[in-house]
Length: 235
Image (tube, rainbow, N blue to C red):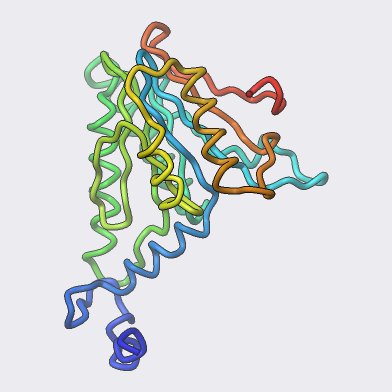
């Protein structure tokens, strides 16, 4: 009833308008869009950080590589997203440009947090200025800058560092299981196995290991490795 009253009074017509209870309804609608997107889990391990992403699409007519959810920003930074793919593409391209600008200007690898912060700043702007809607996408960045790190940005432009996190469909259920089963000191193989076990527990009969890709950033290698294998090999 309260949501209906808000809509009738026009508080959801612009991302720049606060409802009387302090909410920005366009931002809340965008957050619902994220929960319709493909799910991903990121886990910081002992000497690496891993991301396991559900491509979800399984179509004999589809070239599966074109549905990749894990994208390289720099050789030591990858990102996965949930939400509107076209929105994510724009932000991913911007992150890549920022990374290359840093290398050209400073002749060094960009810090993961600096890239995340710049992208979060862009997302924040689209909740404050008129004439545009918020980006309907949540992004999880994994990187190596001396140590493995994992960041997540939300619709509002906030970002936080995590030991492990999940975005997309059933994100809260995935996080609840992560809280129970995550432990420090996992190897990358153990991290991938844990993520797949959590997906299997939450998805139930819908689970299909063939739909998953994994990105691994090793502290030793210092760069990203995106695993695209058959389900048995990934497991």
